[in-house]
Length: 167
Length: 177
Image 1 (cartoon, rainbow over the protein chains, first blue to last red):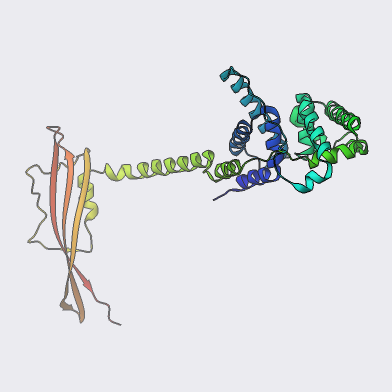
Image 2: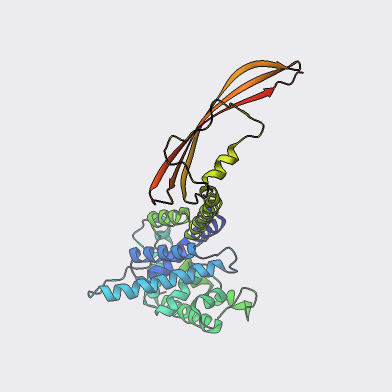
């Protein structure tokens, strides 16, 4: 039997699974740890009473972000050998339509996204792949709204400049 | 910081056309997808019985057990004499030839307050219509019962088993329709 709170949590996951995983992956750089972070976060959310939360989606992103940061701290303590981070984007998926369109552009932008600072990257990930508004992102990061908007604009400015230099 | 969707300082920042093109490219990028395994893990999490609910059920169970124990306490600690008196049916006609007898040598003391356990096995037999009184048929019931009482002998302090066999005869008028 699934109660109302659990149904709400499942609904949040299904709507944001891509964005939540992308956020965790952008922080941990490891798909397995990202999935563990998402799992840990939702295990925590299951113990909370989200039914009366005004912004349950933002809670989910906060929980996943914190769990991902915990994963990074734990891995830093446990492993002495530095791991190569896994890219946020997977171009190995064969999609002829996508290849025909702007393959070069996409690869260039993807590389630049990986080079962004962690602060800027997580804002971009939450905005683009999480579909969140700036106010929600500000609440998640605990940062002032203008700061978040400025980070996003700087990140996109950099990506745009890079793209224009190629074209 | 606690911003909500309703108190944005400037809604225009949500729709910045300057970066429309780069945002579109970003949305088309093949972002890595979570595996099916994590989907199953999250579904399994939500299917689990929530700890809080389980604790609530455990608390209710404990309260019910406590109430049962409190309710059973006076019954278990009634003196044997009261138990015998309570079982007597005032409407019953007792057979004078078969009086209750105690098989054990030590008869239970009237003030026995150390009753441990009592058990009664009864068997009722219907002897049918045995007489007619004032034109009304009378039916006879025979009740054979053995009451066993485990108690502590107040003198010796040893546990004693007292067996009380009882034989009751009940006569009942049969109402005519």
